[in-house]
Image (tube, rainbow, N blue to C red; front, side, top):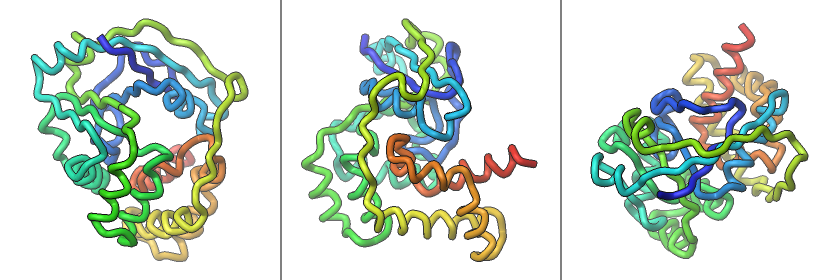
Length: 239
């Protein structure tokens, strides 16, 4: 058994494997992390500020998962991990080959490298050289509902409020953030079929943009497509 954590704005006792977005690092699925602090930051991110956050603790029989389903395990931030994450962020369905995926998350230690590589400012070899020196902060994404029902067990859940626990707040690189803003605006214009000026207006008026200025929520680690999804969800809620 391995101990894992999940943080969110809703209390989750019966997770749904395919309820989330597809354009995440390991595709659509139920995400858990071995890092309690990382799960806590997701529960307390500012976009959840008007809600109570929830931190849940789980036990996963990973040996049973590996013996019963096809599982992909990335041991390091290597070439294979990089290709997989980039493909998933672009909407590829490569994750559908596996019942679960385990590997490093895009946390603050690798955020800069991923942004520079995505923007074409680092070549592949340089990106891999930088990633090779980082120790992965492990996350697991479960794609199969049967794995959740048979191998994942909730042991504890608690409500968390902003300020109830100390949070480290690393400041993201402003130049990289401007590059990310540009990509989000361009993607918004394509997704909503509007011009760049209108996409600029939508972006800078969004709650997502305001929340990006809060380092403690780690939104800056999210891919551009995920941020576009957040903004579109905002627009849908406002209709």
